Amino acid sequence: MEDKNHASADISARTCLSLAREFYPEVVRIRRQLHQYPELAFEEYDTANLVACELKRLGIGTTQGVAKTGLVGILDKRARGPVVALRADMDALPVAEETDLPFKSKRQGKMHACGHDSHMAMLLGAAKILMQLKEEIRGTVKFLFQPSEEKNPGGAPSMIKDGALSDPEVDAIFGQHITTDLPVGTAGFRPGPTMASADEIYITVLGKGGHGAKPHQAVDPILISAHIITALQAVISRSRNPFEPSVLTIGSIHGGTATNIIPDSVKLMGTFRAMNEKWRSRALDLIKKTAEETSRGLGGKCVVEVSRGYPVLINSQKETDFAIERAGEILGKKGAVIIPPVMGAEDFSYYLQKKPGSFWWMGARNPKIGATASIHSSKFAIDESAMMYGSALLAHITLRYLHESGVK
Image (cartoon, rainbow, N blue to C red; front, side, top):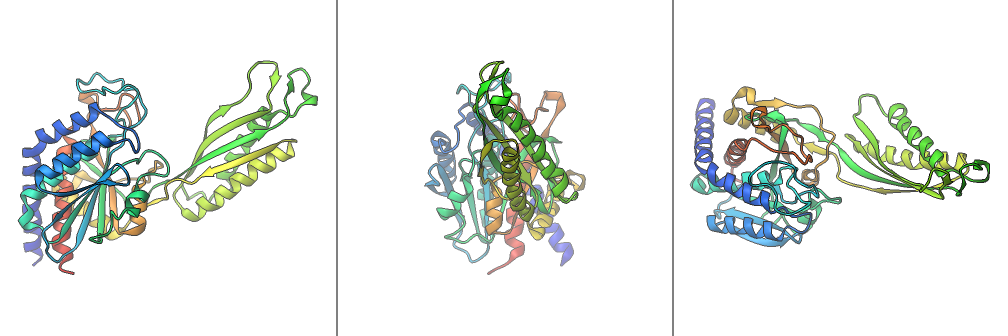
């Protein structure tokens, strides 16, 4: 039985790869069209219409207006069996593109600098493969195209609220992210905590303005801010378990107007990342307390606001092991690699709080064609052949999961 299952998986992998190669030119065309017309969070109307047209052309039932600009496609054979969801994000970034690509963004100040155009194209590629193999499907496939992954609080909670994981109820969910940190033809996996939580910190330091030559008559919020920034790093270095990854970055300081004027206030903005929810909550309390007490000790005040962002992304062990094995069948055993935790954040984490599943990184690095810049860079570019592997992998995982999970 084991040999039979192995042979079946091998045939499924070869078939998915063959179809992915066949559909690759169309996937590239879709990706490049999406790349030229990027839209920001919850503005993805043109994007959603393009995706809906592609799904409907395939004969996949499609519902638009989910989470405002998102959509859900359902491939349902009316057969009893598991339900697998596959997710792609849709929004672009407010970045001015600085590549020489012939299909570069035509919308000034907007760019698919995080690869969401390729995510959508790969999921549509997987949909094409699955429709070709629909007689092999033993259950239901839901295609989730989600808005606003880039902007706190993310589009995933709205998708869940609007029923993306129900009717029919999803049993497992899978997703992937393109990256130039891994070479094309590989994919990076990690079970358990994989991506960090992401919270935004806003601190307003209140002092008393005055002349720079008379600091004794003022309360200097710039000096207080400097002490706060130093003290907050002690929260990470002295209060955190050394074996728990965590980072606090103050990325913006605004205060003052001249060399000889002490301002009344200074604004600080930063991000806090953690891989443990208990430490995350404790650290946020410590950040607030440390900033307030440091300000008070130096004669000022401060107001701390925390905008809680995405939770820690925790991949379930069973589904991740399954995805790694399937990736080995698509990419070869050396193509599926285990990666360290990533301190970036992803609102796919909300789905994984509700359902078992896995989220991985699809390699797209190729120095020979200049595909080396990181995501969120204005020069971000990918080796598009990664999309062939990504489409095949999504389809293969779905087919095998539905087969091996059995009838409910």
